[in-house]
Structures are given as C-alpha cells and as structure tokens.
Image (cartoon, rainbow, N blue to C red; front, side, top):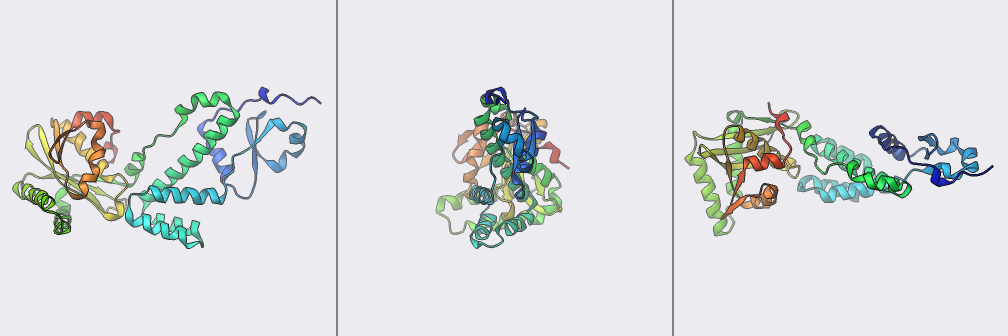
Length: 319
C-alpha cells in the first residue's frame, strides 16, 4: 500500500472550540493524544496503533505539557506579579518543594482577581505553545497567527471581580485614614517629597465640600481602593488622592478607576485632568504614555478624550 505524501494533509482550522480541546488533551496527564489529519480530530494514541503504522504521516502528536512546564509557568507568573505581598507568598510556595500545585492554588483562591489573572496568564502561555506547534506543521498558519494572538490585556478580569461606586460618603472615613497613612509614610522622605505631600494635604483641605470620587469594591463588597478629585474650573479636574489596598496592588486597579473617572468627566464636559505625581505615584507615569500628557513640574495633564480613545471602556463595572 502506498503511503500518502504528508504534504497532502493539512492542519484543521484552529477554531476556539478546537483550541479548547487541544488544551484539555495537553493537560490530561493520564493519556497521550495525537491529531488525526484525515479526520481533523484528536484521539488517544492507544487507539490508532495499526492505522499509524500504515500511515505515519496521518497522525501528529500534540505538544507536550508536563508538570515541569506547569511549574515553569507558575514561576514565570510569580516573577511578573507587581503585588509584593502575593509575589513573596507564592515564591515561598514554589520553594517549598512539597504539594506545590495545591498550595499555589490555595493562595490564589484567597484573592479571586489574582486567581483569574493566573488562569489568564496560564491560558496565554499554553496557547502560544499550540500556535508554535501549528506553525511547525502548517506554513499557512504562520500567515494568520497575528489574528489569533490573544490580547495582552486583562482588563476584562477586573470588571468581573470589581465594581465601582461613586458613593464616596459611605467610605469617607476609610479614605481619610488612607490619606493619613500616606502622609505618615512620607515623614522620613526628603524635603522635596515632604513639600509635595504638603501640597496634597493643602489641596485636600481647601476643597472639603467640592470633592468627588470613586471607590473600587471587591467581589464581597469590601473596600479595595479609591480615586478622589476636585474641579479647578468647569473644564479641568485635579486628582487629589488615590490609594489601592496592598492586597490588590499590581492588578491594574488604579488604571481601572482612572479610566472610569476619565469617561465620567468627559461626559460632563471636562477636557483635562491634572494628575500630581507624589511618592509611589511617580511609578504610574508610564500609565499615561498613550494619552500624550503635557508635563508641568510633577503634574501630568491628561486629555480625557485622548485617554478614552486609547483605552477600552470600564463602564460595565459601574454601579
């Protein structure tokens, strides 16, 4: 019997459903699977022995995904985390050497937003392995890969785990405590930093009756962070203070709040938002790069229209 030329076979279309099937088979550590290029289906290696012997080119083994691959993915995820609390806790788990996978999942369950971020990260990693596998076996796939790449943006995860409330009064005491804590944390800073903090406090006190804000709430309704602003005039708003709770930092929650504020202000006719950069806030400067802000001293002026055009909306999370 003549063996068909492998070039006569083609990889089946990589639909979302087929992609999920491949991922399921790769993560199944109890069985080995292969792709039948004739049927365009996945099947266990044990069931195709005779057919594979007759026509080896018809079947392609799936890319491996061993426990060691899972461990490396966890390590890569931990290294990417910006939240120092959970980054260190997860590093301790990876160093423990016993029950690592179970411990890792237990820690993530404490913080639903972080758990979702992990599954997003893991899914992206395993998808890239599949895309490379497709490229090696199908030249045509290489030309269409860009359209299949997942977006490098986990904003939708925040909308699933956090809601936004404009009821600043309900959380006023909490917000004031966070402001006091910020001021105390800067007591040992240099003179310029102290002067910057003083300007924040003076601006806060000067507009006691003209503050507005947004509060981020976790899935259980608990306080997760805030963003407070006032108005310099009808067309200009100024950020007074923002603070994200330690366990929620590094998830993009400040950007989430700022985006919602920008869209709300834009609908009200506000053109500019003045953003003071003080202390840890200096690290957020790159967040505004796509909005091409004007820089004056340590303040950034962000155009709401430009911000809204360059970022996906978070309005779905608004209560």
